[in-house]
Image 1: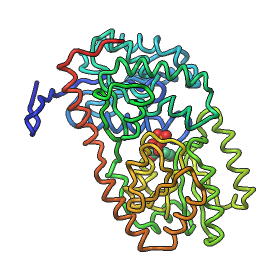
Image 2 (image 1 turned 120 degrees about the vertical axis):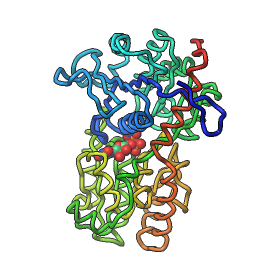
Image 3 (image 1 turned 180 degrees about the vertical axis):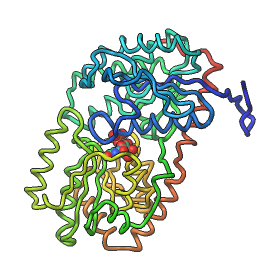
Image 4 (image 1 turned 60 degrees about the vertical axis):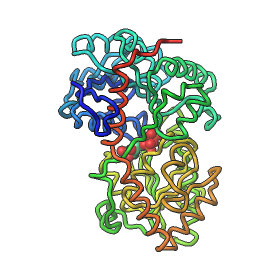
Length: 424
Ligand code: UDP
């Protein structure tokens, strides 16, 4: 069925049937440690919003255990399928590329049994490898969201294995060349796709992720602290996976500096280790806290259910996002939606999310002194902090999952009437 958009420009095919690939991590997994992060939230929220628009979404993820049912109805229109691809166990991401083909062939078998799909949406390069195979098998358009890109990582983190990143970049290039559309989370990611991968600009569409405003909204900090049992003033917050790319060490440095003027200041770090060096990073953070004399003032909080995080944002005076790279930066958006001022690195999507000095602060070159200076300004100047909070909330309201889903839906409607692009 085709209906017309209100502007009458493009026919809209509804409902759409979408196969969404999230090979290495399930949208139902806990974000904030291991492989769980923004992508899980993105796939979950986007599929939910697409389903609520009346579309049919089947999300395919790799089965990790025999205990899972083969399919789960997450909500009407959004079904999650656990598909065999290699051992039924959690295995390092580095070993997954060689399993993508087997995973794709098992997904194909399941797809065969279902009605035909209008498009396939791949999340991350591993899903991209599988989805690329499926695109050709079923001759349907491929939409790719990369979440992170190897060539960006190689620049941001010299500790990453250059040989592995080079192989990954080649795989990404193949996926990019055959993607009918690529969803960039921000203007920076759009530029990275064009400049680092020579992606066809006409196939890149900027579709920012969003925040669930039903949970992430302002409230009374004192009440939120009581609910969490945190008796600290001021409270600084870091949320996310513990890995060097997220810069948690900068947050600890900021706390140590802030305690010179606010001796009761506390830093809550919500999240767990991620990646090969995650555990090492956690040990280092604890040693750093000890060295700086703040170990009693750093609270390590295990990963929290996504919605519960809103209480942490509301409880905090400042949210620190000192990442080395960030394709979008959901944490900064969620904090903004709760009215908590953010001090973030001027990298990636954070630059589009934050208007420096208006909706938050952006710091160049991961300068810990600048992070401290802005944090101190916010803690000492209530007028400034209230103004930033108000502007940040207003800005965050513009990002809704429904809007992101509508953009993807419009894009799919356009792609289904085109011939899928051929491999170069
Ligand atoms: N998150 C969560 N619980 C936690 C820690 C993080 O639900 O304990 C979520 C957080 O709300 C955000 C996502 O994990 O939505 C992290 O996304 P972000 O874009 O900041 O970083 P990424 O993980 O994509 O690198």
